[in-house]
Amino acid sequence: MSVLDLVPAALDGTPLDPVPLAARAVLVVNVASRCGLTPQYEGLERLQQRYGDAGLTVLGVPCNQFRGQEPGSAEEIAEFCSATYGVTFPLTEKVDVNGDERHPLYRRLVESPDAQGEAGDVQWNFEKFLLAPGGAVVARFRPGVEPEAPELVAALEAHLPGAPRDA
Image (cartoon, rainbow, N blue to C red):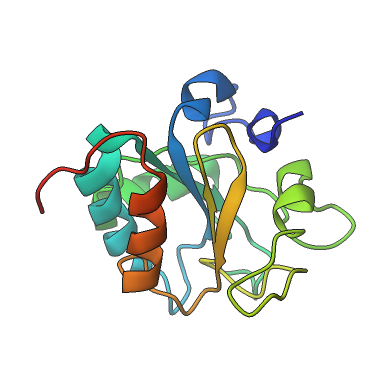
């Protein structure tokens, strides 16, 4: 089973079809609306705009496990992301990324090590996992790594199925 088969439902509760994602690079990010890192939504949206036509999908996964920083309903989350950051990339339903109730997607993702070789629990909001087309986890970036950091962009560009647009 591909990790893409484990993608949570969309924020509105409808199923997300893993088939279109399988042909794309996917950047999975656990997100929160009331976090000091929330401005990373801007960089994530810029990545989506710049690389979407080349085969990137940013996938935001709301999570309320870190100091209750994503308390809103699905409608509140959607409104916040759209109105505040102009988010166009898909958002999933709110899930747990750690602990006994960890979503199956994250059970698989946390097995992947970061650049220092450390796997395990998600440290905080805005941890990023890069999936190559086909769903293999090819990179993990901890929360402090900005979406447009050179190392993240280089990894992303190396796994895009098409050529990126000019910035």
